[in-house]
Amino acid sequence: MSSRTPWTQKASSVPSDRIPLRKTTPKPKAKNAGSTTPANATIPKSKEVRRLEALTNGLQALVSSGGAPRMDPKGGCFCQARSHSLSSHNPACTHCGLPLCILNLPIYCCPSCASPLLS
Image (spheres, helix red, strand yellow):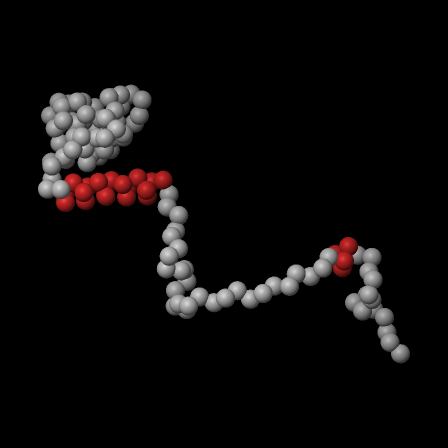
């Protein structure tokens, strides 16, 4: 004699019983078991981290080129910190006194007098 329970019935009135089960396949294991992330995967960087990396890369290029400062390829900004916030690296040019905004990076020369902003 076979007992019929809700778990042994073929047809059910509950909608969730009619949803077919997904068959999952196991994910292949990484070759390097000691590492939690693959070697070629990169972690996304925030806007501030990318800005700081650009500054450090520019400073490293300045040091490797013999310390000769160059002009900003974009021409610099002459807003005198009216449109943008004041630069925290160098708020004013030490030679001509031009107030510098955050768009004038310290790795370039002053956009007004072309004197180096780094000493």
